[in-house]
Length: 297
Length: 321
Ligand code: SF4
Ligand code: SF4
Ligand code: SF4
Ligand code: FES
Image (cartoon, protein in one colour):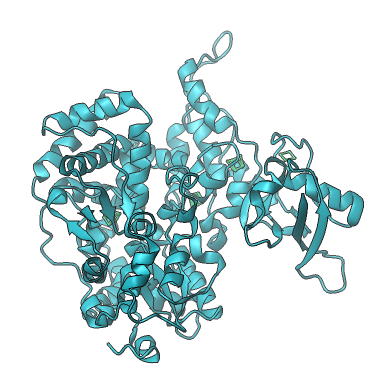
């Protein structure tokens, strides 16, 4: 299966582990990720740009969709935030022909037009909807038996459910759990799995943001999780990067819960070298986890 | 239809007041709502169950509670729609982020305090008109989206920031604030926006969309909060971390097509805000050690001139409005 591949800013910035692990697993899932059509695409705006100017955000996303359309390929993303922001923009654009036409006027100067045929899809959804769980299972060479992992979705891939077409694709609601089970690991269910990681207010209300980190990682750990897996690199930034500070805030022992990117989990189950997926580059060390599971980095 | 409810119980007057779950099984009509089920329990099985309701038609806003972990109006939710597929019970709990009174009844004092804090009344400007204040129907139509709030507290129940910081005004009060900020007859916009710019105001929202998801009246509180952020920046309130973050973000995309993470925190805090920079430093250093640091030279996306052109264009459209 071939996709126009939109890596997002974070996978090429502060979360290079996400990019590396995606590349590692793609081939084994029979995915061809074509970056060429997306080479000139901009950021989705991440919801922040939309605060200032929603139309601008929609126009930039329409431009990305038009680029994908021109390539004739479906559009693949690897970030919950990219997914949500794009889906919301797409809903606004495709449900209002006048709006789409006026946005297209702005795109015309560059010779682009968005016809409304793109459905941006996160790798996690693509595995279930396009690639097939069976194909994933077939690629698993080292089932993650005994690996207790807590799912953490990221707001934008679960809300608002209307923009994400949950009604037509009910399996999207528990897609992460489905994949965890498919790779042989055990789901540690906890209340915080669809909550907010707190990243957007990190610089604005740091205490609130860090409390969220402490609450979610602490709760998952308490329920017996050995790690947490997330399809969102921004959640990863907060839950991994700020976990030491969050632990301090609670004046407790280090929470010490490794946070794993979605494709890293797939890769571990495919026997890919953890170092090739930069699992040794996390803030919360994964060393102990990997040795417990006999997957030395 | 056979239904089992697992209801959260709490009685402050009992010997050991603590929350526990009690299961009630019964047979009920296919179209029955969660509220119908609870009333049946109270009338036929267990008269001690406390709950709040009145209209039974999603108008009065009394019956917001959590069903399977998410806030909703009990009278507006069909039992058949919330029956778990694994055959487990429907879990019914009181609304969150509010003090517990008894069973499913919660304390609304803080809710109303926050509504009051945004001065939810019209503050017109200039001399009083001879007859009524006139407002364009277009504007009132837009406002009707917010005015349909029934003060049920579902959004407050599930707001992720209120869970960790009760100083936050919260979605319902901020939606109410927008109702006046966006009212053409109100003359206190600037003051209002100034107050909403403070700690606990519009910038403390984490954009988690819980309030949008759970609101039974499509008020979309978060969208209103975002609108007020923009209005606050337009009105010149640009000296908050949040405002600087939003502006730096837009600037980065305009400049290079993508997000320049390395530059972002510095701009957000202001280059001279050493204290905040140091606060960030431990992670910065750790990130560097772990090799996570983004490339120092943020590369421009090829074709960024097209992105920049779209910035100019849409900004012009906005200004012409
Ligand atoms: S949401 Fe994140 S990774 Fe996705 S495009 Fe934007 S900033 Fe970049
Ligand atoms: S979007 Fe903002 S106001 Fe709404 S629930 Fe989330 S944090 Fe609260
Ligand atoms: S905004 Fe919606 S959820 Fe919040 S109090 Fe009003 S009606 Fe209820
Ligand atoms: S009983 Fe009035 S809103 Fe539910």
